Length: 121
Image 1 (cartoon, one colour):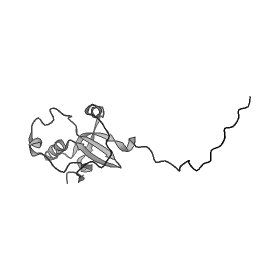
Image 2 (cartoon, one colour):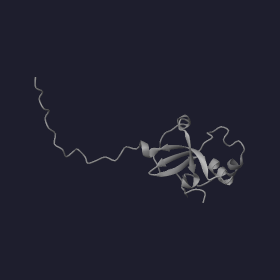
Image 3 (cartoon, one colour):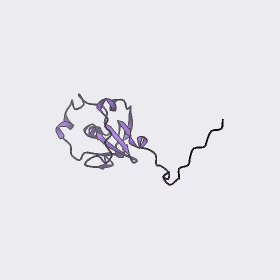
Image 4 (cartoon, helix red, strand yellow):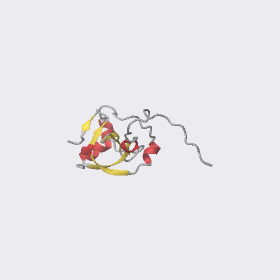
């Protein structure tokens, strides 16, 4: 198995990162069998092209969301690496789990409002 799973579409919310934003994220090594793709189809001509990364980022883009890694961009690069018998690739990973607000405690709506305490002079 090359990838952990194959999906058609992104299960996570839109992050709005531009190409320039992605370039600010340092690449890290990721095992390909931990990635779930967000594209079901592949263009064979793009896979076989010598200059397929000439105009794009050299590193694939992945999003970590709810503990899972989703390969958002770079399916052809990842598959090319797999065909070369590599099971680890360098990927830029946006960690949405780290950006999500922490789970909150109970609501404070049930606490009655109290008047302010007067200051002593």
